[in-house]
Image (cartoon, rainbow, N blue to C red):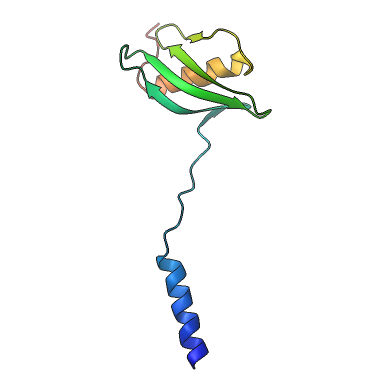
Length: 99
């Protein structure tokens, strides 16, 4: 009987224990994902993001959502996918190009 009560208390304790949140990897296009996406404090049309690929390359980028320009223009993460992720982030932030 005591084992049954202790088993029930153990199950209750595991249900009430805080569970770590499982987060999505971020915004992904192909092998490139972006996270830590923030809007520039100075220019609302600029987004800052951290991108990484499946090979472990990481870098921080700034995208001008008016024309899709990435800064820096070259780096270790493939720029075609990085540009696609940046365009998607701009659209989701409501800063997509009007053209």
